[in-house]
Amino acid sequence: MNTRGAFARAISSMADDTSLYAREVLAINLAGVKCKLHFVNPYHTSTKHANCGGKIKRTSENYDIAPCILCSKMVNTHLNAAINLASSTIRSQT
Ligand SMILES: [Zn+2]
Image (cartoon, rainbow, N blue to C red; front, side):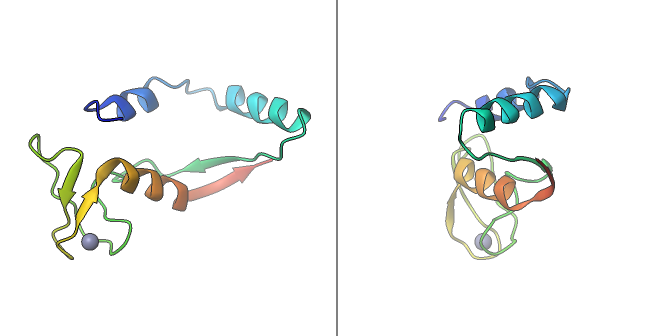
């Protein structure tokens, strides 16, 4: 989003009541689009490099693009967090 912390704030402001999301998924499925609700692990998604598992050194100066300490690649921290969230499915609800 290029707005520091906007993604994290958006997630933290989401309702804790997962039944709301389950109802949204049901409505989407009733509209003919196949959709599942997945619970994900929200921890360390911004600091763990999805490619190598190394730690991303994120500071206020390199908040959006930061280096991985293990592989030295420059990582888009927002895309990396999205990849970690997508791959950290805890369980799914149909
Ligand atoms: Zn890495």
